[in-house]
Image (cartoon, rainbow, N blue to C red; front, side, top):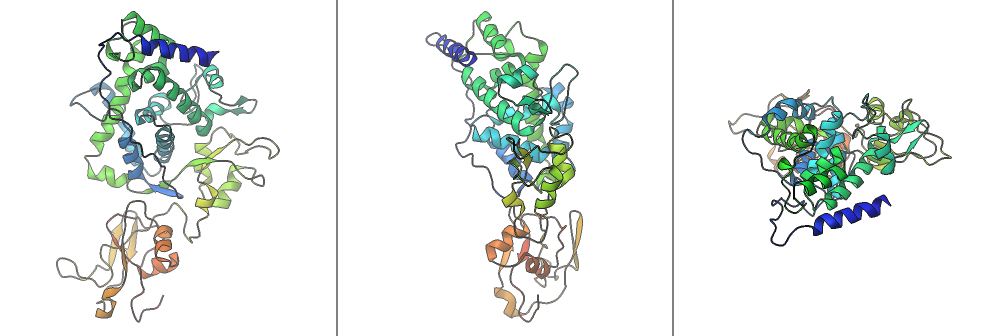
Length: 413
């Protein structure tokens, strides 16, 4: 009944536009290519780029939404922090929206609703990443049962939110502004406001819809301010460098029957148990449930990716030296004895390389590279790659740096 009513309301709104009515503002279409990356980790800058590529309205006017830019000023800083769960969680939500062919402005809603905290609860009743009330959650098929509140599951709640946003996006003619206002106030309030103000989804002017609350009116400005804050931040090289790090590639994972809790899964796959608990507050005690029942999904790195045959943790990147040992810099000096790369100082042998080694293979590090992917590409052991470059497992990968792939002639691994 609810689905039929929604469809009817959508059709009536879409057909109500008079002949010659103005079209909705031109918006950048979501690119067709939405394939999510694979592997246990991904580069933080790639997450940000996928977000930017999916925006319906990427343009930022100078001085727009100044109040809300100040209010959300900490959001870019949190994305840049390696000790915050925000960036991998943001990447998971962006992926879900891109796969649904929806604008990535919707990925900013959890900033407004919960500060991107999966366990957030409001005294008024809403809970979780998307701050759904119990009735809304049940209406959108979020599991709600004794001992399990699916609103606190980033998997269940994000799937439901994306379904709901897809419905709203279609109902309001693809206008993301009306859709987010409807997410905040309910679709019927927005449809009634359009009717009272003589507007339709095709010619809507959301900032001129009278009769809506100030909170609903401000919702679009909040999301646009967040988007512009990130665009402003990406003018700073240090912010982009802070994003340029490997982060867990989170997916919905159903644990095998023999694994009964988060700690067991973390031990099996080499993941951070404390982080998995933070990301999955729906499992308050870390227990996943009986194997005999339908098991709720966990937000984690998938087993096949996490168990990649590498002797270093899957979410550690490998830094390369600025120049391979013994090569000449632009000043004519040989490579330095040590290279500081982020949090690690890597020892590098300083010597003159024989001419016979000039043909040795080298790899220029690209975005998203890690020790395992590079070693696999060249069919060498990760341990050999590390040793040949004087690297340790905690060094930080930087695109553009050079790695020595082959062992120097006369050298021993």
